[in-house]
Length: 319
Length: 319
Image (tube, rainbow over all chains, first blue to last red; front, side, top):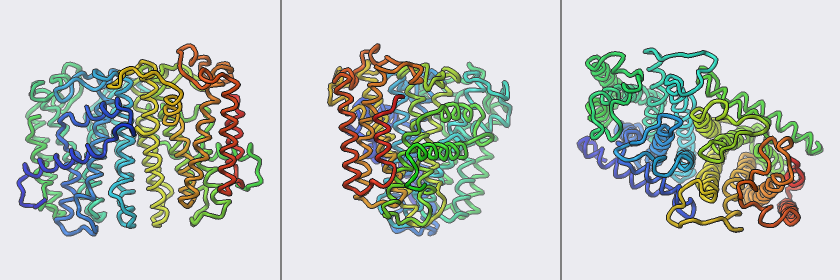
């Protein structure tokens, strides 16, 4: 993608590229039972924003713009499987989070959630299958046995595996369940979330995979360790801003705009950034994330690509 | 392990080695919320047979005995992370299979199932986390950036990822759910299992991960493609024999011996090998699997290790 494309063009192209690749990679019958294939596709192609794979492709693109890439294949081809993998893991986590045993959501992206349509059993399995496919895809593609490519793929799997695991996504959802009183409190006893707890929970639940998405793109583009660390720092602010804005939109938005139940956080007395700091201060906090992210990009000379535009989009988004 | 050890000694040592490594690798607080760490350990250390990791270590050992290994590190160290990973995936699949939305089992290995103790939400998350940890572990260990090691790890991840996914484990459980009428029948309409369907279902649900367990061991020991194919063929018969014997034991065993609810298959009118062929013919079928497996080992000159003893153990086991 030419760095002169506008952000909107980049986002549209990235989404189309990712969607086509997801369609290609998702298993179909007879490899996969029809019911699981249908259930996976129902959730994967539900009109998501594709923020995570966009970050993967944009990070790879920014690294390539810097001329820091040492790969022998076009950057996008190298990063596309990782982009698909992080979206598959994100989708699986939404499917499982929506289950009655978790957040018990019936509406997602304007449509009934997967377990409403296919039942809890198939929803659990579709999620499990998406996670396995994500790692199998990361290991399989892009094909090739060049030592540099193989080493990058392995590193990307490790980063994504850690972010998807108990240090990240799964750990964050467990903290969320406990805070909501839906899981045993454990040895520590009841521990309602405070500001630090809220930040830790979201850092795991949302932040870890957003960071891994961008980092995996940088890795696949052949970034140096320093550059990978900068991309990680940038993405941490993207993740925090994303969550703050999510909380603001839950207060301000309508179900029609959001495609999911609005006002749910307040109805359930969930601790959110909006509840903790108020709307005005929350908006300031999101703006501070954006300012820090831009500074990180500037310091790392990563301003040529779309990463700067993406943090602005995340902060200004309306759904 | 010296090839002169008796099978019993090998199995005991392998179990102790795997258990110690699992304890080392399973995440703990503060990396992992305490509740998830406890829940994972409850299920991982529930006294399982460890068939899958034993196959991983035994396959690596047999390949090493043949002198076909080209690795620079001791075989067991190279294969141990893969052995742990397949057990983590097996454990996650049991946790999810036991859920009310799936097989709705309350007893496993003589103890209440995980969701009975920790609730469905934490049980789902502990399973999700175990799957992620398995792939992160495969990518992380054994440490080292030698091109041969890195390539083997990547190949093992691909094999395990495919087996855990919809072509394997998840696909098999979906077919099982549909046959039990617990999931929508899909476009094909109702399709009760026949003999071929039963074989396909078990080939995915049990066979795929048993094959991947042995194959991952062979890969990590540096086996040639031909040797890997032989190990895969051997393990396919182990998997089939394992399932046939499982069905026999469900008829003949007591809950005390099995550590799980006996007679459940018949009570639920599930199609099993025992129901389809009768006990006597089922025993013959298991013996035929063993004979084929021994022939495969003989043809591949893999008779020096413990693989032959393992198929005999699988066929003669009482629980």
